[in-house]
Image 1 (tube, rainbow, N blue to C red):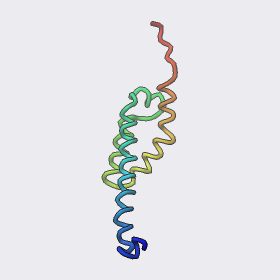
Image 2: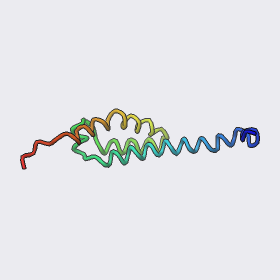
Image 3: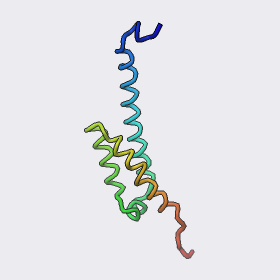
Image 4: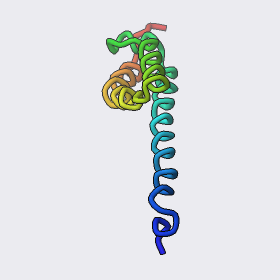
Length: 94
């Protein structure tokens, strides 16, 4: 027998919806931690703001519930630029 025949479709909703919501919040937290791990200078050179990304992702996640979409945008579009600047060799003469 399928569990939906025993418990009905409500069990599926009770199990799946919280897992999806938890994944969305986890993605947002991952993006905030990643933003925090880079320097302000790297963000500035990439044409962005570290503080703004943290605030926007946090506010839209915890107050509006769709910060995961902003986090996805950050992870796909902004993070590669910041990492590229972070890993480029510096021209310091020591």
